[in-house]
Image (cartoon, rainbow, N blue to C red; front, top):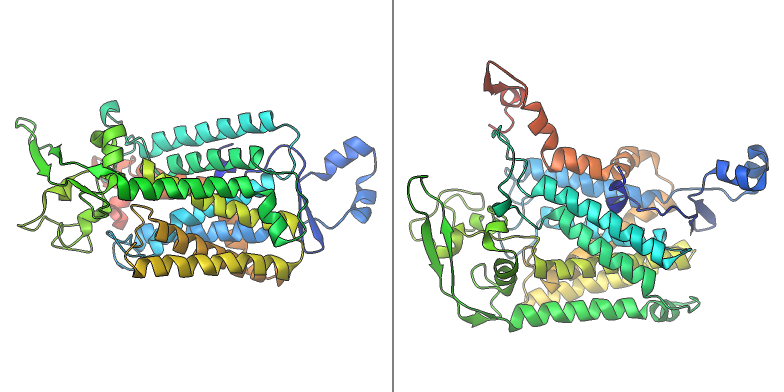
Length: 444
């Protein structure tokens, strides 16, 4: 499946190489050397530089997939693993930015050498469209929850945004920056690295500024929504009072207003995480019945992968792209890790400071402070993985994670999107309720 390439290494068809220390990674096969040069494979094996794959990237991706599975399966039991209902940060809140960071790193390696910018752009657009279509199919509402043997989605209520849709948008814009927005400067130092990719940094600054201006500057008026009741009864209408600017609470933020205006509230995620807040659930921090004095906004749809919040997701991907540039242009292990740790630690400190002064860490809004802390944590974890796997050589200990990293998209589709358990529960004995999942207590 070619869509693998988006979450995986996104390797291009052209020959590309990346050096790890004094060892060269070559993604071109030996058979291709044989065809071009007419030299026996044994001679090539003796003369060419030792080839290796950047295993730390596979391990980091596999670790992220494992974290995703953990929080999906155990998040309901341990609140520390589940997504934060609103402000705050849990383990689950690191999964999305880690994937985006990995996509950025991979793009820097994939587009190190370009034979044609136009051809590369066409391939990037095609891959983004494939991933977008896959996301709409898997997360648009066609596949229902466990225990519901029906399938299909009313196109009037199709969810437009989702995890794969967000990754496709971030991938396309980041790939376009890497293809078109890099200078011809020779990189010999950190300052020359910044100069070479200065236009990409300008894009990141503009996107961050745009996000902050819209989040804190847009006026959010009063709004209303409807909740279906019995088929024979009219839906209940709820009115939410706002009339404010710069609010970052669930009811009156600009992120939700933009999604309701452009996408339509019927196309948003119907089980928002803020429904687990104490104001909206008597079982908080889990989902539960509404309290007697629940505010009007508790049952409103809200998309955690909305339009404005995806702007900061693109910035996360661009930061990952910078980490990939360091791999491409610097060959010494210590230099790489130093140039990785400086921005990573700075971003974490910046994000925590902003949170302390009132710009709260919020995954649902993808706040600027959340972007800083999460991508900084991704950088630190990537440094640790690189040190353990590619520098110290402890790769055998991570073979399972390597395998998961190389098959990340397929694992996500089968497990993260419930495709595998949904397929299993389609086989039953006598009644649909007598299926294998019910027998082992899954989805009950």
